[in-house]
Amino acid sequence: MIHPDTEVRFISKEKGYGVVATKLIPRGTITWVQDDLDQVFTKDQVTNMNPFIKKHLDTYSFTNKNGEMVLCWDNGKFVNHSFKPSCFSTPYDFEIAIRDIHPGEELTDDYGYLNVEKPFHVIDEDTVRKTVYPDDILTFHEEWDALIRENVPEVLKVEQSLRALIPEKTWDEFLTAVYHPNLMRSILECHYQHDVSVKSAS
Image 1 (cartoon, helix red, strand yellow):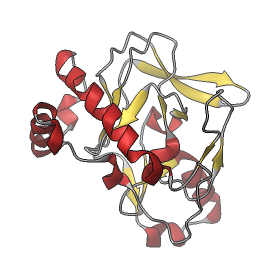
Image 2 (tube, rainbow, N blue to C red):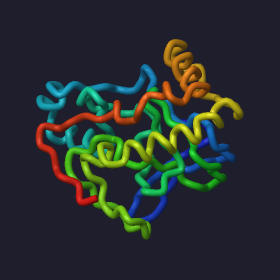
Image 3 (cartoon, helix red, strand yellow):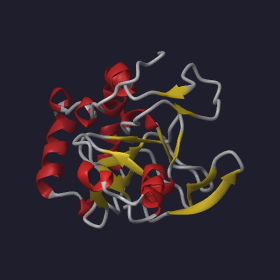
Image 4 (cartoon, rainbow, N blue to C red):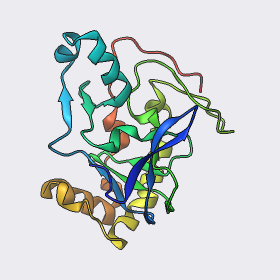
Protein backbone atom coordinates (compact mmCIF):
# COMPACT_ATOMS: atom_id res chain seq x y z
CA MET A 1 0.00 0.00 0.00
CA ILE A 2 1.24 3.44 -0.90
CA HIS A 3 1.19 6.26 1.66
CA PRO A 4 -2.28 7.85 1.92
CA ASP A 5 -0.99 11.42 1.48
CA THR A 6 -0.28 10.80 -2.21
CA GLU A 7 -2.06 10.85 -5.54
CA VAL A 8 -1.37 10.02 -9.18
CA ARG A 9 -0.68 12.99 -11.44
CA PHE A 10 0.58 13.51 -14.97
CA ILE A 11 4.29 14.33 -14.65
CA SER A 12 5.54 14.87 -18.19
CA LYS A 13 5.34 13.51 -21.71
CA GLU A 14 8.55 11.55 -21.11
CA LYS A 15 7.54 10.09 -17.74
CA GLY A 16 3.78 9.87 -18.09
CA TYR A 17 2.04 9.53 -14.73
CA GLY A 18 3.65 9.34 -11.31
CA VAL A 19 2.88 9.43 -7.60
CA VAL A 20 3.21 12.79 -5.82
CA ALA A 21 2.82 13.89 -2.23
CA THR A 22 -0.32 15.83 -1.30
CA LYS A 23 1.08 16.77 2.12
CA LEU A 24 4.57 16.92 3.58
CA ILE A 25 5.96 13.39 3.96
CA PRO A 26 8.90 13.70 6.38
CA ARG A 27 12.14 11.79 6.04
CA GLY A 28 11.79 8.42 7.72
CA THR A 29 8.13 7.98 6.80
CA ILE A 30 7.16 4.51 5.64
CA THR A 31 5.92 5.27 2.14
CA TRP A 32 4.97 1.80 0.91
CA VAL A 33 4.34 -1.63 2.39
CA GLN A 34 3.70 -4.85 0.53
CA ASP A 35 0.30 -5.96 1.79
CA ASP A 36 -2.14 -8.83 1.38
CA LEU A 37 -3.96 -7.19 -1.53
CA ASP A 38 -0.86 -7.00 -3.70
CA GLN A 39 -0.90 -9.75 -6.31
CA VAL A 40 2.07 -12.12 -6.51
CA PHE A 41 2.54 -14.19 -9.68
CA THR A 42 4.86 -17.20 -9.91
CA LYS A 43 7.09 -17.74 -12.92
CA ASP A 44 4.79 -20.52 -14.15
CA GLN A 45 1.76 -18.25 -13.92
CA VAL A 46 3.54 -15.55 -15.88
CA THR A 47 4.70 -18.03 -18.53
CA ASN A 48 1.11 -19.13 -19.16
CA MET A 49 -0.31 -15.63 -19.14
CA ASN A 50 -2.10 -14.00 -22.07
CA PRO A 51 0.58 -11.93 -23.90
CA PHE A 52 -1.62 -8.79 -23.74
CA ILE A 53 -1.90 -9.10 -19.96
CA LYS A 54 1.77 -10.05 -19.63
CA LYS A 55 2.77 -6.79 -21.33
CA HIS A 56 0.93 -4.77 -18.70
CA LEU A 57 2.34 -6.91 -15.90
CA ASP A 58 5.86 -6.25 -17.20
CA THR A 59 5.16 -2.51 -17.12
CA TYR A 60 3.57 -2.21 -13.68
CA SER A 61 5.13 -4.95 -11.55
CA PHE A 62 8.51 -5.69 -10.01
CA THR A 63 10.35 -8.96 -9.46
CA ASN A 64 10.99 -10.06 -5.88
CA LYS A 65 13.85 -12.15 -4.54
CA ASN A 66 11.99 -15.36 -5.39
CA GLY A 67 11.56 -14.45 -9.05
CA GLU A 68 7.86 -13.74 -8.54
CA MET A 69 6.23 -10.70 -10.10
CA VAL A 70 4.50 -8.40 -7.62
CA LEU A 71 1.72 -6.13 -8.84
CA CYS A 72 0.65 -3.42 -6.43
CA TRP A 73 -3.13 -3.22 -6.17
CA ASP A 74 -3.14 0.56 -5.62
CA ASN A 75 -1.23 3.58 -6.96
CA GLY A 76 2.10 2.15 -5.84
CA LYS A 77 2.51 0.72 -9.33
CA PHE A 78 2.84 4.26 -10.72
CA VAL A 79 5.98 5.17 -8.73
CA ASN A 80 8.65 6.24 -11.21
CA HIS A 81 12.37 5.58 -11.29
CA SER A 82 15.05 8.07 -10.29
CA PHE A 83 18.78 7.79 -9.71
CA LYS A 84 18.16 10.45 -7.05
CA PRO A 85 15.14 8.77 -5.41
CA SER A 86 13.03 10.26 -2.65
CA CYS A 87 12.20 6.78 -1.30
CA PHE A 88 14.26 3.66 -0.77
CA SER A 89 13.38 0.03 -0.28
CA THR A 90 14.44 -1.99 2.75
CA PRO A 91 14.82 -5.77 2.96
CA TYR A 92 11.76 -5.80 5.24
CA ASP A 93 9.15 -5.42 2.48
CA PHE A 94 8.59 -1.72 3.04
CA GLU A 95 10.05 1.54 1.76
CA ILE A 96 10.95 4.75 3.54
CA ALA A 97 11.39 8.39 2.57
CA ILE A 98 15.10 9.21 2.60
CA ARG A 99 14.44 12.95 2.56
CA ASP A 100 11.48 15.23 3.18
CA ILE A 101 9.03 14.98 0.27
CA HIS A 102 7.09 18.21 -0.13
CA PRO A 103 3.58 18.59 -1.56
CA GLY A 104 3.70 18.19 -5.33
CA GLU A 105 7.02 16.32 -5.30
CA GLU A 106 7.28 12.81 -6.68
CA LEU A 107 7.79 9.65 -4.69
CA THR A 108 10.49 7.84 -6.68
CA ASP A 109 12.50 4.63 -6.41
CA ASP A 110 15.80 3.49 -7.82
CA TYR A 111 14.74 0.64 -10.10
CA GLY A 112 18.22 -0.82 -9.67
CA TYR A 113 17.01 -2.91 -6.73
CA LEU A 114 13.82 -4.10 -8.47
CA ASN A 115 15.44 -6.93 -10.44
CA VAL A 116 14.86 -5.63 -13.95
CA GLU A 117 15.33 -8.37 -16.53
CA LYS A 118 17.18 -6.28 -19.10
CA PRO A 119 18.83 -2.82 -19.20
CA PHE A 120 16.31 -0.08 -18.57
CA HIS A 121 17.10 3.23 -20.28
CA VAL A 122 15.86 6.25 -18.35
CA ILE A 123 15.66 10.02 -18.58
CA ASP A 124 19.08 11.62 -18.07
CA GLU A 125 19.23 13.17 -14.58
CA ASP A 126 22.80 14.44 -14.94
CA THR A 127 24.07 11.53 -12.84
CA VAL A 128 26.93 9.12 -13.46
CA ARG A 129 24.47 6.27 -13.91
CA LYS A 130 22.44 6.54 -17.11
CA THR A 131 20.90 3.06 -17.36
CA VAL A 132 19.40 0.61 -14.88
CA TYR A 133 21.06 -2.79 -15.16
CA PRO A 134 19.92 -6.21 -13.87
CA ASP A 135 23.00 -6.50 -11.66
CA ASP A 136 22.89 -2.98 -10.15
CA ILE A 137 22.04 -4.40 -6.73
CA LEU A 138 25.21 -6.52 -6.85
CA THR A 139 27.24 -3.44 -7.71
CA PHE A 140 25.73 -0.94 -5.31
CA HIS A 141 24.38 -2.94 -2.36
CA GLU A 142 27.06 -1.78 0.07
CA GLU A 143 26.39 1.86 -0.79
CA TRP A 144 22.64 1.28 -0.52
CA ASP A 145 22.96 -0.58 2.79
CA ALA A 146 24.82 2.42 4.21
CA LEU A 147 22.06 4.72 2.95
CA ILE A 148 19.42 2.58 4.64
CA ARG A 149 21.33 2.47 7.93
CA GLU A 150 21.70 6.25 7.82
CA ASN A 151 17.97 6.82 7.41
CA VAL A 152 16.22 4.10 9.43
CA PRO A 153 16.60 5.88 12.81
CA GLU A 154 14.27 8.55 11.42
CA VAL A 155 11.52 5.92 11.11
CA LEU A 156 11.09 6.02 14.89
CA LYS A 157 10.75 9.81 14.98
CA VAL A 158 7.73 10.37 12.71
CA GLU A 159 4.11 9.27 12.53
CA GLN A 160 3.65 6.03 10.59
CA SER A 161 0.22 5.62 9.01
CA LEU A 162 1.24 2.32 7.38
CA ARG A 163 2.75 0.72 10.49
CA ALA A 164 -0.25 -1.59 11.05
CA LEU A 165 0.45 -3.33 7.73
CA ILE A 166 3.85 -4.61 8.86
CA PRO A 167 3.77 -8.01 10.60
CA GLU A 168 4.85 -7.82 14.24
CA LYS A 169 7.69 -10.30 13.77
CA THR A 170 9.08 -8.24 10.89
CA TRP A 171 8.70 -4.99 12.83
CA ASP A 172 10.45 -6.41 15.90
CA GLU A 173 13.33 -7.63 13.75
CA PHE A 174 13.55 -4.22 12.09
CA LEU A 175 13.54 -2.38 15.44
CA THR A 176 16.33 -4.58 16.75
CA ALA A 177 18.38 -3.73 13.68
CA VAL A 178 17.73 0.00 14.10
CA TYR A 179 19.25 -0.14 17.58
CA HIS A 180 21.96 -2.60 16.49
CA PRO A 181 22.93 -1.57 12.93
CA ASN A 182 25.24 -4.57 12.52
CA LEU A 183 22.08 -6.71 12.52
CA MET A 184 20.43 -4.77 9.69
CA ARG A 185 19.70 -7.13 6.82
CA SER A 186 21.31 -6.25 3.50
CA ILE A 187 19.28 -5.07 0.53
CA LEU A 188 21.28 -7.70 -1.33
CA GLU A 189 18.71 -10.16 0.04
CA CYS A 190 16.23 -8.64 -2.43
CA HIS A 191 18.29 -9.78 -5.42
CA TYR A 192 16.96 -12.32 -7.89
CA GLN A 193 19.31 -13.78 -10.47
CA HIS A 194 17.50 -14.00 -13.80
CA ASP A 195 18.31 -16.93 -16.07
CA VAL A 196 20.09 -14.61 -18.51
CA SER A 197 22.24 -11.99 -16.83
CA VAL A 198 23.28 -8.78 -18.54
CA LYS A 199 26.59 -7.31 -17.47
CA SER A 200 26.45 -3.81 -16.06
CA ALA A 201 28.44 -1.01 -17.62
CA SER A 202 29.00 0.56 -14.23
